[in-house]
Each structure stands twice: as structure tokens, then as C-alpha cells.
Amino acid sequence: MIVLKTYSQVLDFYKRMSKKYNYNYYEGCGCCFGNSTVEIDTDRMRVVKHDFSSVQGGFISSCEVLAVIKNR
Image (cartoon, rainbow, N blue to C red; front, side):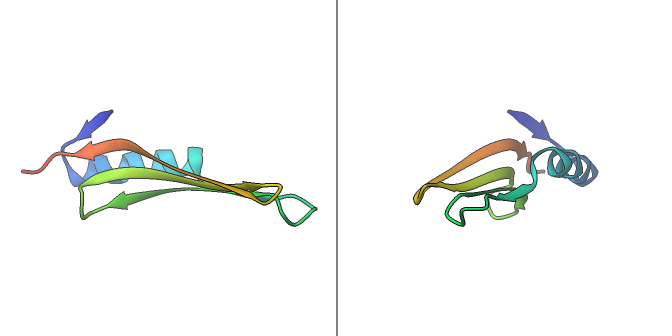
């Protein structure tokens, strides 16, 4: 896990991770899809990646903390 200290570090890290992890895809069948987003959680002071997908009607969801923002 990465510890970020300044607001500019948070923005730079967020931009890099957004380019790497943000995506959407949909299959032709209509029941299969995938979605991944990166966001800054200001309530808990962290950068989080959310994944949500469906394969043949079964849903899968996960959340991963990428970085923690150090309080001053």
C-alpha cells in the first residue's frame, strides 16, 4: 500500500491509476459486462478501486485500497 502526503501526490496518483484501471466492456449476449473505476474516498482518506462484473447472470463485486492519504 502506498502512503500519500500531499494533495498534488494524490491527484497525480489518481490520474495514473485512472488511466490504468478505468474501463467498461459489454459482451454481445447482454448478460455479461465488466466495470472498473478508481475514486478518491475523502471520508476515509484513501484511493479505492471498485470492480463490478457479471458473467452469465452471476454478479461479482470487489473493492481494493490502492493508497492511503496521510492526515496532517
